[in-house]
Length: 503
Image 1 (tube, rainbow, N blue to C red):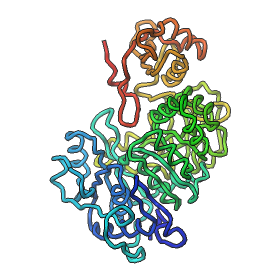
Image 2 (image 1 turned 30 degrees about the vertical axis):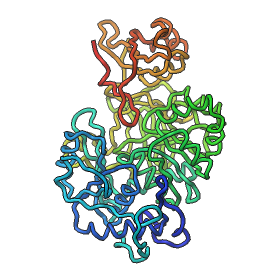
Image 3 (image 1 turned 45 degrees about the vertical axis):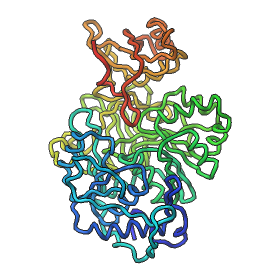
Image 4 (image 1 turned 180 degrees about the vertical axis):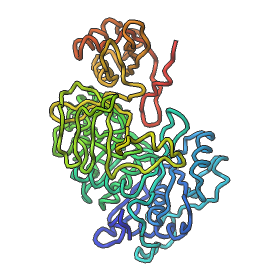
């Protein structure tokens, strides 16, 4: 039925569990019937919006759109009216797909609506159609748009990244190679379903492999332990989730045993602090694998399942991805060819912008030809805006964003990320962010924003500066330290540095 989801044709996995959300689940045959019936109703639609709640209905809606060859625009249910209005005006969907009981805000109510029906156990009490009569065959080509996913909009209104079908297929197949991911794996996660991590990796990934996914609805340590004890083999999460697990592990022996049973623990969407890596490994004997990607590129690198995870690194480029580090003047510092062949010096110190090319890339920003052109070099490489070094063993280490995390101080180029990791190793630091501010002498001075573990007894600025100087180098020590009760973060746990208070 589908080139993206071969398992939906039935056969040996027809009765295997495909999706489970709480006590509601669908086998592959039931998913094929549910998505196929909806796909038949979408014929002729230009684009469809999906009200992306963490439910079976969202998964069925996206699969149906892909079966119908209609681009889907996932909508974050927590978005404000202004952001939703911008996304809907920009993408101009002809219909919104939503669960029958979902209440939609005013900005969405003007669209035609189709309620998603789910035929399966614990779903709705209707007869289950036969899988082989459900919906049209998928005839869309690799270059055809599959999803339009809107960026976070940190530098202006969100932009719609048009993701072709080939980018989804190539990324998921490359991750299958890196993680030894098969149809026997059962994935558990509690990620939102309106972005790359939760939707493409966390839902479409298992479906492409013919495996199973169990969505927690809402993340909890108890839910993770329950599913891992009940046969789940993989866990996907963001650093905030793993931090909560690390905190719970200090008193929860059963959680440690459950995590120890997992075949693979994967963290993404932001860097996982080294001290959380170490606490989880010490308690469970398992190492957390990190990977790196973004909306426009899907996945770029990952630590391999058969490799040696190193805290602070995101592994090596995935099969099929070309990667290079580039100086501001365009000079290449180091590179990886798509076949994994390294070129250049890997000294672990030379900082450059990551640029990539490959089948994993988006095709354009919707309705933004100038922004699309600016995102690529003349020779076709995508400018990620992320700064990194390549360690001597070939592992990529992200040190921050070019716009906010590259600090030029005293003639040095310094990545904020490595200083943040060093600060988080201090026992009195709970959270840390690092920025640069203008300085008449240094050009920029390093500023540390600290949430202390004990607000009544914070570490001194000199203590933190000496701590960083000992671990990294004297020129990387913070010159100014500011204490906060909490750091501003987005839904994925990323620190919003532009929202930090300024004097």
